[in-house]
Length: 56
Image (cartoon, rainbow, N blue to C red; front, side, top):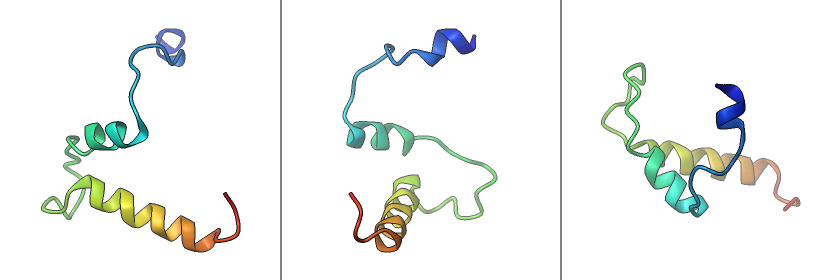
């Protein structure tokens, strides 16, 4: 099964399209179910960007 999904040939999409798709995932263990996953994603990206300000 790993070999089947290791290849990146299942679908082609932009990074933002991928983020929107992941936004549909519901994590029952997440205590903040009322907040969209994409909100957490953007907060994480901004924190990383702040930590690595001088890097691409």
